[in-house]
Image 1 (cartoon, rainbow, N blue to C red):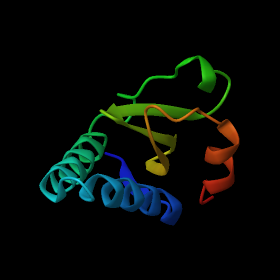
Image 2 (spheres, rainbow, N blue to C red):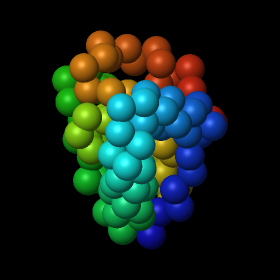
Image 3 (cartoon, helix red, strand yellow):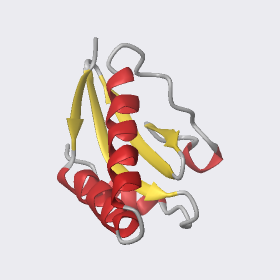
Length: 103
């Protein structure tokens, strides 16, 4: 069973996304945050659930999607590091993940 560790920047990413959504619909923002945490909690038992899309090939990172959010993480032994969250419409940049990795 994996231990989930949230990098501070990843929590800040989630907070910023929720704040943006809350401008129009605070209840929707709360629902989305709950969905994200529920989906991440599922990784505890199934850490390899996320995919390795083309932009992550050759890296230790995986991506999990809770629409409209992409959750980027990596597995290191029994630890699972949540390193970055991004809205789906934003352009992906691998440097953002590598710069926020807590290890």
